[in-house]
Length: 102
Image (cartoon, rainbow, N blue to C red):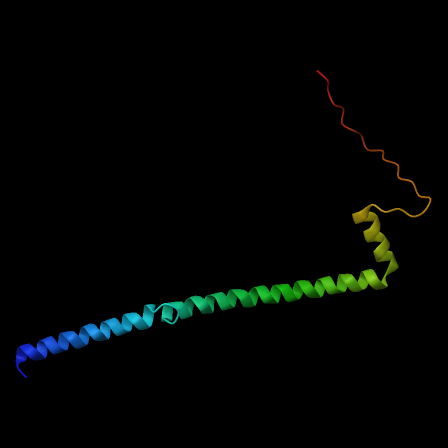
């Protein structure tokens, strides 16, 4: 092998190595960049899962209190649903806005 052939061979090998490294880094769906993106997405999903589990615990406690605590059930019925007991009346003493007529 002559010196010119060796230089060409080394350049070809170098180009192949660079292309291989670029493929490893940026290959669609399986490259290092894709792996880092998927890890980041996994961490975000894990945080969301933890938050949802905590919310579910709070909601389950609220459900249990509504099922087992009549005082709490009455409180929610009155505040959120404006329900009244039998023979109860509501008196509204708030000032109503006057509408000006031109």
